[in-house]
Image (cartoon, rainbow, N blue to C red; front, side, top):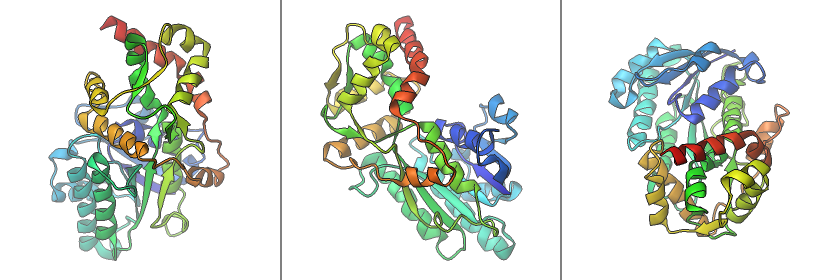
Length: 337
């Protein structure tokens, strides 16, 4: 049975990882003894607490390496899922956690129960990382360097763009009458349902060997998780329009897809208060990489991970059916504004 600490647990990524770790329908639940979720001081989650996770409220961006080392001693686990926050401090916070892990190892040695770190990263690290992507590349490299020789395993999981991110464009579609992103209409975009990304990380982090280490096929490896088929911006638009409720309400009178400039894309995302500027810039860095003809092949990592538990990958069509009301609510909020 594994014990797991999840950082930045308040994020969409953290939320779905925890749900996949301990919800009744998850294949991971029988392998998990305890989940500790790091939340900011001002936030809580009744859903996560009701599932049995322990919430620890602390603002990690204000903590030193020693403070985090003390936190890890107070909440000992065999596995840490490290999610860099969607904020400008992501690199500093992630590196502080990694340094704290090394500090604990140096102080406790063989007494330390921590065996594994799973780092959540992003697309594009191997494709000439730039901007926000370069920050994730730095975190990955730092983690591998710091943990080398400690006996703590590291696994990096790079996630494709979440299908749920399209919800931020509902306002644009409804008010401006087009879906505008800075890629050509035929450029293919690797996507993944955030729930599937959470499931992939949960499988890796929780189903350990008899020595509480990551399974050998996950140990000290890097994976890119994405749905098997990347979709073009035009295909995304077409499929959204084919959902009756969205075609009638959200897309009514809309042109369809429109390629816009990076500056225009940044300006639009700047109007969405829920999106931190660093996350908006990450979107644009990924789109820019796609425009260079890269990231078009999602690979089979998600397929292979899901096969271990006989799970099915959610398709974009299934996502749209499940989230159609969310798109309509997002557009309704735009009208209210």
